[in-house]
Length: 125
Image (cartoon, rainbow, N blue to C red):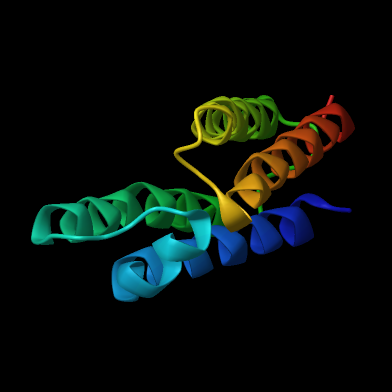
């Protein structure tokens, strides 16, 4: 897929999670086996949406990046490593039983996006 399509899809996915974690954390987190039992946990979920929303905005703003450019390679490399970090952290949460239930989907999600970011980076070499 071309850079524009990839970055549009990437930004929509991250924006959806940012909005959900900001708006309905008390309904979303229990699906992962995590309880939001006080105002601090609620705020931390909303705070997390800053970074997810930021990734969505950056992906959206760079949709027209030139194919094969050094900037495109750096962008996709950065997205790949960001998703690998997400994979490591959420896999740890699953293995230590912090995430249960639907929690397995997070490492799968980050692995998929890391792989797609890697492939997109390869297309830009």
